[in-house]
Image 1 (cartoon, helix red, strand yellow):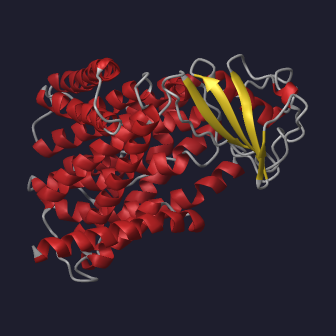
Image 2 (spheres, rainbow, N blue to C red):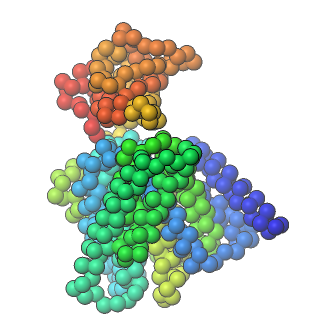
Image 3 (tube, rainbow, N blue to C red):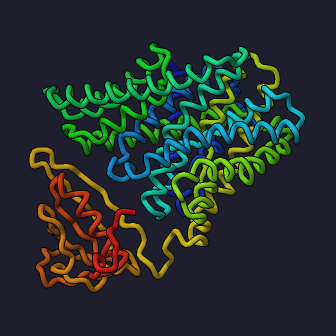
Amino acid sequence: MADLSTALGIGAVVLLLSVVAVRLSVRLGLPSLLLYLGIGLLIGEAGFGIRFDNAELTQSLGIAALVLILAEGGLTTRWSNVKRSLGLGIALSTVAVLVSVAVTGAALHLLLGLDWRTALLWGAVLSSTDAAAVFSVLRGVGVSKRLVGALELESGLNDAPVFIAVVLLVAGDPVSWTTPLLVVYELAAGAAVGVIVGWLGAMALRRAALPATGLYPVATVAMCVLAYATGDILHASGLLATYVTGLVLGNSRLPHRSDTLSFAEGLGWLAQIGLFVLLGLFASPHRLVSALIPALVAGAVLLLLARPLSVLLSMTPFRIKWREQVFLSWSGLRGAVPIVLALIPLTNGVPGAQHLVDVVFVLVVVLTLVQGGTLPLIGRWLGLIKGSTDAQEIEVDSAPLDTLGAELLQVKVQAGSKLHGVYLSELRLPTGASISLIVRGEAGFTPTSTTRLQEDDQLLVVATETARDAAERRIRAVDRAGRFAKWKGESGTD
């Protein structure tokens, strides 16, 4: 019992420190995963002396955490925001992955002298972007919904093909004509499982009469985990099934949907914190020094050659502007996924696998600092993020009113927004949407048609489910182009 109390106490302290680290990371402008990894290193063998070197347990817990992270990502992704980016996301998660693996593998074969299979294994491990990093960083950057949607879909979808590639390379079996068919089957079957489980789950939840509100979020997340297990049993991609299930459920009319999304978000944070702290605890700092030079070489190849080339080739059919291609190239954020994938060859006894884990760990830290810390600056330099004199992306938080079929939208008029000075009558929200409250300073009041919006106003918009998207688009349009947004061709869709 004493050991249990100690373990629970340490776990609670680590969790509280990690929660505080989120606020600290926002102030410093750094992705929180670095602080989580640092906490893991601090309590590990080089810090407080807790030794943890169980690779198999780390891999199993890592995959379990990825399932929860992907479930949260799918549940919180609005289909209306990403449907225009579906082609881009699929291309980035398939064609771009193949190009990245090939280019990275060839470059590391030449530069580091790795044999071809090992070099391609390194390329496969490093080619996956991280859903947790993308979801936590990109949603607050302020670029167009099309780019954010493409990157979110890529991070949610590319884990599946990369996982398959790593398993195939670790197995060491010769590649035959059936290998591509196997990959296609696993991806197609995984997507199908996700759609079926998501559709059946949404239908079951709508018809269920559970005795407590808190059971609906639990059941929803359980559906996502069930999709992973079902896909794995059918030898399909369980990771893809999880994300697709979450996407279907998150965009269905679920009872107590706001409670479900809040629960999933909290569970996603818990999974991220636990995963990154665990990976930091598993790492051995004394080995990381020898991995620095290979990590820098691999990082340079990935950042300056493989990622840009993979984006260029996969985005060519979509006629993406060069500025957007540069941003997509710089936004290939790495996180825990490559480290978890690197554990697969380690647990299978592949020679040199421990060195690969160390290299990937160093590489993730370096790329997170370089990419995550500079992403807003790159976006502004490319003209994709509005500066201080322009309106930022409007922050919208929703809380569905299940019995009324309505939603609450919270909108803040940012500094420089062209919503400033617009009369409510000029806003012309669609039928089914209206502003019910304005908070200005410390006072709140019910607006009228002659009320004029001001900077820093906080608006409470009530909208029916069918009018929500149109209301959000109209607010964004006026935010960017003012009262004559429609005449200027601004629709607010991006």
